[in-house]
Length: 287
Image: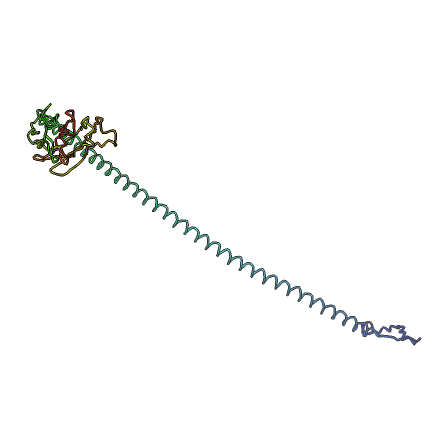
């Protein structure tokens, strides 16, 4: 048996070293050793390859784990963001509801104020209407009273035909056409106001038909102060004709004021025709 297991196999190999040599023989032991070494080297390569594969797998596993952890972290962030977003939405809804309630309250307050203001305006309008009505009634009453007072209070005069010998300071008349209220004094040519009010006065002068009379004129005076003038002075060569000129004025008088003709041309009564006239009347009584 021992011979069977320990028999030596002689291998004869022909090794050429560039020259023809003698064959070289190897034992079975040498062959097994070489095969073992080759197998060991192969196993070493396989082991290194397995180590490389395991390293790759380990790195991939680690990277995968890291990615999972990163994904989990990102997912947590998303969850947190969603929670924050929900909180923001909840706050916005709360604020929106609060603003809605505030707007409703302000609107109700505005409606109430507008209602009160409308009622106040209605009251003011009603008071104004009552005041206007009262004023109209008062005005109508005063107007009626004024009309009653005016009844019989007619003041008016018209005089004509100047009196001969009149001075330059005044002019008197001989003919009285009307003298309602007896305000005009024919002896002095003065009108003394009997009723306070607004009066209208007019003066009409007609220059005498004579070549010796070149001009004629007079002022209407109020309390010694001249107001308006009627004056005619034809150009040379036309003096022989007869010319008329008029003036008028509104005056506000009080009882006792004096209106008269004054500042007249010298010898005025000899310069004018008898058609010259002076008039005045009460337009509106003033209180």
